[in-house]
Length: 131
Picture (cartoon, rainbow, N blue to C red):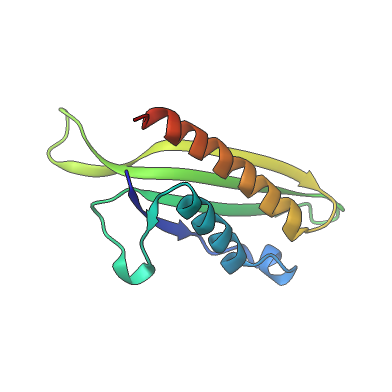
């Protein structure tokens, strides 16, 4: 895999309203993948024949509580085939997540979680694609 699509899911309203920026998360992911030597396709170039690295951030806040949980998930989807199914289909081939319990929405903490996941992914990618 030398070329990838990148997809960042829309943020929950709660996070977006409190300053978490989807574009900043996307830029962090894309820049890290490029720095590792991967070609990142733009949205216009999206191709279903290359893997997709996907980031999703969700959040849950207690109605009366002061804490909320943020779950950051990084997946890599690729085309696979199975002897039990006809043809090729997209499946998650790698996935990790970070669950954070925090008292206030903090873009920096969410980006730190994202960066940890990216580092793990790139380490696993390098190990699986040794030259």
